[in-house]
Length: 173
Image 1: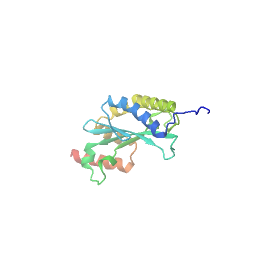
Image 2 (image 1 turned 120 degrees about the horizontal axis):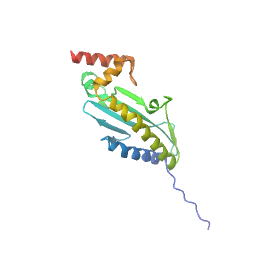
Image 3 (image 1 turned 60 degrees about the horizontal axis):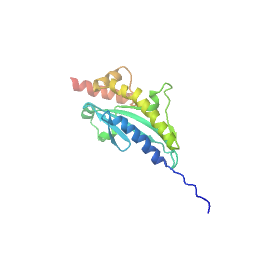
Image 4 (image 1 turned 30 degrees about the vertical axis):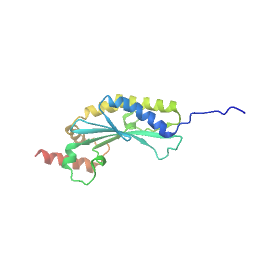
């Protein structure tokens, strides 16, 4: 009888776990907690989120993945009269590709253990070099307000920017 070739078939779920586990090791050092595909850290004023997003075009064997970064202000949450649950409210969102030089949306195609490990290293490098320093620069709600006042409102609409600034101005009166 001929020998049957055995292969270690991995699925997109396995690839996602490799990426998530590698990212977890780095972010736990910085006190981020993991819930599902999202890592979060709160400094009491702002909560920072780093989320792994799989594309709908992923298959059982091929994972297409990107990363979203977001910030929520606890002060704006208190001031904003909305029925949206806290986990659905963000005051700053930015896709990982916007941290790169070409500012293009970035998706990784993962179809092997090796490509999952390479993807994890790529994502971790961007998070360490770009995302975490950006989070540190935006350490308070006042930092977000300063960004918005200077015309920066990444991931929110012009209307949201004006609304959030109005809420903060009224609260400081």
